Amino acid sequence: MKKEIIISGFGGQGVLSMGKILAYSGLMEDKEVTWMPAYGPEQRGGTCNVTVIVSDERVSSPIVSEYDVAIVLNQPSLDKFEPKVKKGGFLIYDTSGIINPPKRTDITVCPIAAMDKAVEMKNSKVFNMIVLGGLLKVCPVVSDKGVEKALYKTLPERHHGLIPLNMEAITAGKEIIG
Amino acid sequence: MKGNEAIAHAAIRCGADAYFGYPITPQSEVIETLAALKPWEETGMVVLQAESEVASINMVYGAAGAGKRVLTSSSSPGVALMQEGIAYMAGAEIPGVFVNVQRGGPGLGTIQPSQADYFQATRGGGNGDYYVITLAPNSVQEMADFVDLAFELAFKYRNPAMILSDGVIGQMMEKVVLPPYKPRRTEEQIAKECPWATMGRTNGRKPNIMTSLEMQPEVMEQRNLALLRKYQQIKDNEVRYEKTLCDDAEYIIVSFGSAARIAEKAVELAREEGIKVGLFRPITLWPFPEKEIAALAEGKKGILSAEINAGQMIEDIRLAVNGKVPVEHFGRLGGIVPGPDEIVEALKNKLMK
Image 1 (cartoon, rainbow over the protein chains, first blue to last red):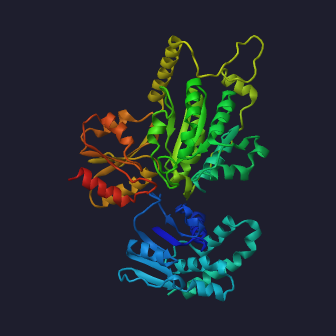
Image 2: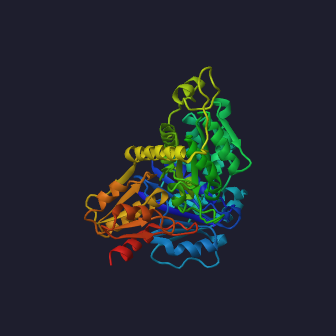
Image 3: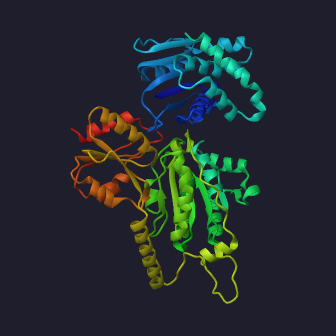
């Protein structure tokens, strides 16, 4: 098993941290992982992306030209990465940020109303975890248990109280993804 | 963890005495991680943010002259500023470790990854006839492993050693097994292992003088010749490289550092299409594995040098191959990192037509 995943959105949407949790989840399950961010001025509000590869075998290139899964959280990201999804791959997009929805028919397109759900949960910060839940539903690259372990590993101890809420958000994401 | 963080952890674990540096993207996590880990409380290692790269390198010069294991890190424009100090250290035969997490150039260039400092690293970089031992890590694991290796080589040969990395390896996160802790050397150990070090003169010993200056050309020429003999020894003993799927290959991609990771995937993709191609990865860029590449070129249809620059290592490959087979270059510039498919295309277009 090897999944090459791109996550792309606005800086501040939790793109890099979502990728980090995904990568650490893989690590917790003894998989090979790479996490390669776009580290430019993107982090300050422009479009920002991270490539996460989770694999049973050694990962050669941390940079790839096409992806098994693209998670796009704004229109520029959709425009950029829709053509780069492998045939038969998945495109997950948050419905609130998208004016022109994806058109390809040779891939599985999965809308997720993650922003709406985050508002409903009264915590916009769990937005990225809802999206992660959606990913794990359509492409279970890591288990919930792995994610939980990764959260304990990556979050500072003072935030460990928030982990149940994050796991709730993941469950919510699994329920609402189309 | 990130490659930059691995450098910081490895420095502490391999018993480094000091780090002097000045922040610059894409390697600022080195000093940030060191500051967070506070090694001065555990091992006594000094971590200091200098006022500039010029100051950093001269702090390295001074502390390393006293036999200490000292490192600095920077990115391309910062390393350019350090070249005077590195040349002085090469001239005075002072060991020290430099990490260059390269970004696009020339000048301030971009902050995105590049391998355009190959010439600067492998041709000395400063003035005079000298070389710096240059290691090119292609993973976070090698970032961690090469810190101690660089120190060992630097002290073995009393020569500066550089870890030539780039924004891809510095910024990416992957699995890493950190090296075991080694204690810092005691003053007695340094005195014994580094009789050349300036660490206070004992009675009856001639003063140790660390300098690259010599007013007598005849004496200087002898010093140059001694340096050349040392460089030959390094060339004979310290060449490192890795070969992947080269045995049945008709074509060879030669690539180092992050580009070698991308090229590894390019080899996978090309093999799926039935193209017999292998990967040769120089791990030491100086000394360059020239004999190994010359031997490997025998009977091959062509070599592609895939680098994230305008064509620098290709010169060393061509010198090694000496016209026996065609050698072409592929690269992207300015902070753009190529995808594996671009390397496969280049292989087809430049060598297979």
